[in-house]
Image (cartoon, rainbow, N blue to C red; front, top):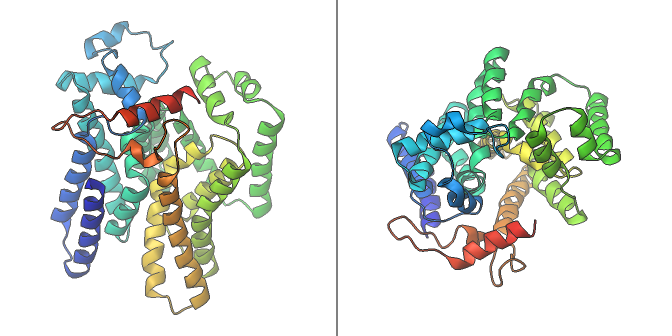
Amino acid sequence: MIYIIIFLLIFFFLFVNKIKKNTEVEYLLLLIVFVSVAGFRYRVGGDSLAYENYFIDLPKFNELSDFDFTNAPYEFSWYLFNAISKIIDDSFVTFQILHALIINTVLFWFIRKYSQNKWLSLLLYFFINYLYFNMEILRESLAIATFLLAVPSLLQKKWIIYILLCLIACTFHSSAYITIVFPFLLRQWKGWQTLLIYLTITLVFAFFSPGEIFSSLNLGVNLEKKANLYISIQVTLLGFLSSLLKLLPFFWIYYLRKKNNISHYFDKLIYIYLMLGFMACFIGGFYRFQNYLSIVALIYVADSIILFQRNRSRNQYKIIGFQMMIYLMFANQILYFGRSTSEYEPGTHFYNRYYPYHTIADPKIDNKRERLFFNSMEKQ
């Protein structure tokens, strides 16, 4: 019920925005709501259940100097972040509030800075990424937030600041190393050059095992293990079609803009997003790299919806196709949340990770959710 209320609230502000120009108070109110729902939840989510279980064993701030970071399974800043949280209060609720505050403040700032319609962008963020960023990939979402802070420097070609922020992102989650490559990918590559890069990477991973590749790069034991884990994910035919289907709306919008010579300041970043998406169709684990550009992609879609709605008489058939792609994007997400997870816990669906929703004021443990998540982890 709480999720429907938030969805309707964003819709309400979306219409208010057409009448009232200054909506900063409403924007701040919605930020508080986003932080509160994620921050005051009680054992709601997937990965966050595991993070909560071992939170008590993580070092406090005064114990960091004696902690063995060399053999630690996670990156330095993750332990630092948890330790800072424990300075405030030694409870996972404090961690959740601090985490949600940082993630959503950065995302709200980024959306307000770049989106032509912040409410529509927030609607897409809530529908597609909110639960994932706030209740699943807690480590990676901190890296994503750090990368978003670096995007202005990337667009302005302030490389030193950009690389420094990307390196900080890497200290939260190793997947952030992909962001260091983004300036190289921003170059104006010709079609055949892009195809050559794509085929080379695909063929390398097709003929050599991930272990051989990453061992030769001397990335370190922990980073090598994580790289192996993501790249070794097998892509099935169903997975290939699913990845392609999710990418289709973004590709169609990109095509329409290019065909009609309608530029966007995220054009080059969307090109990288599409490239990573196509690679994810063939190389397991590449979908994680798309996470860093997912908010950029949603803003791109939201701005395009406003643009094509205003000019829908220009080419009716293409606009109908565009609308179908938007419906497809929403349908994909609904199917994703509604898919059966009975193989892990009978009678459950993926949305049971987040529903029913409990707060710290009503601290109930949903045993089905607990079994669903931990059984799925054991079978991976």
